[in-house]
Image (cartoon, rainbow, N blue to C red; front, side, top):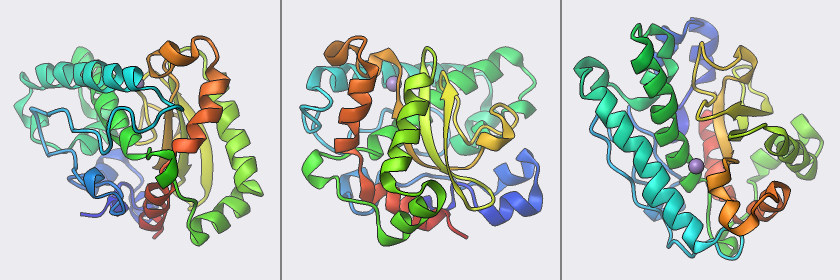
Length: 258
Ligand code: MN
């Protein structure tokens, strides 16, 4: 299954409801084929396991430091998975479903406590898996494909203008959360942000205008940058662009187009 089909615009438009769309979401999410180590996908169903990083902990230095990567991946990401597995241990039917389907169908989970855990920790697992695959050592960062560059120009005016908008969204997100570049159901590129571990797959949770197929994500929780940047979130955001995996982003864009 290609990452291609995280959300297919055609399905979104025709079917409309989260349940119907969720049923068509892929069973796995694969990473950019250009990074052989990033092709591992989130397996279907609990118990989930911590996926390995597609590069060494120090590979993103000096932009993201080794200790931050070790703690972020080995402790924070791992904790989301532990809590997700614990919650799903008592919900065998949900435990069999692909994570993307669970996230797209949160409003259908009637147990409020379970719904909250799936939102926070299921979102946490999905978002971090996506985040690691969005990054590459600076020397391998690449650049947007011609098709993506054209779409960025059409939607934002230029790549620099997109970066400016994305950076503002990331800077202004109060407290903990994420900035996203997405393809909306009508096929446009858009910058959004979400609180906590919410993401653009969460129908019925995030505003409808912020739903779409994610192309790129930036974690702006303090645990993502505080050891090296302390309170200087804008400095972290500016440095982070050096380690964006544009190959992965371009492949996601190619796959998201219908
Ligand atoms: Mn994080």
